[in-house]
Length: 173
Image 1 (spheres, rainbow, N blue to C red):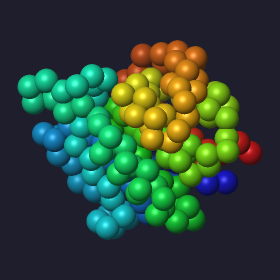
Image 2 (image 1 turned 90 degrees about the vertical axis):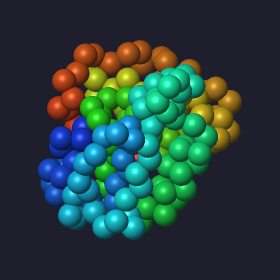
Image 3 (image 1 turned 135 degrees about the vertical axis):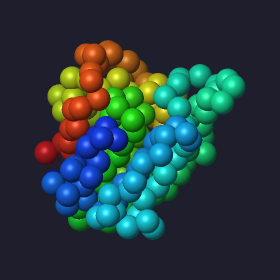
Image 4 (image 1 turned 180 degrees about the horizontal axis):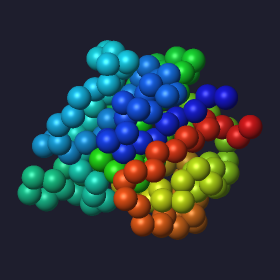
């Protein structure tokens, strides 16, 4: 079954090798630098600069916006799905789980938002998806608030130390 591996920055190389991933989405603040794992070719890597905030950016902070979410959806549309997709942010708790949910729903639009949210919670007790990404994804994918409601329905995840990668199935088995 096709899956999305959600990971903190510190575990991306390990997860890419373990899961034989060849494509990756990185959601990082502009000032955070890192090295792309060698198994991910540059043309199969989407790097988006944003902070983990759920409101319009202030000062040097960059809030996720419609351009970011459109780039996630467009990149996912070209993912060949023969190997898992790595999605990561700094901790693997907020931005990347939100992006993974948007990817899953954009590629498999017939699935229930509630079932997807439950799968997310089952895969990670720590995930607390960034609501700005979820809200924008909900609107872009024409979900009429159902995705926002489903993600709010699973509640905030448990506190995490940023060392808990997980695998989200693209759709129910």
